Length: 67
Image (cartoon, rainbow, N blue to C red):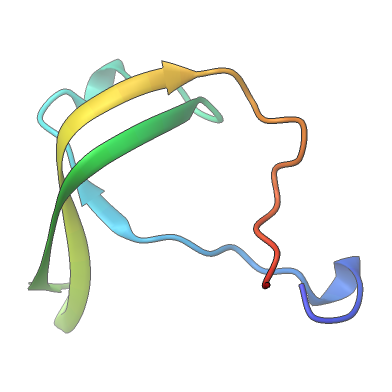
């Protein structure tokens, strides 16, 4: 968010997880993994290969703020 809520946008990285079908929509998780660069839909993108995943409660503040 730069100025106000109207400026907000989704931010994230693609992840590969062997048990992805077990996850639910809008579920919060804490992940660890390795970062690589791969082609996805004809674009070279960073992708996290998840090595561990922990289901967590939704944080009180769900935004990432710049420091």
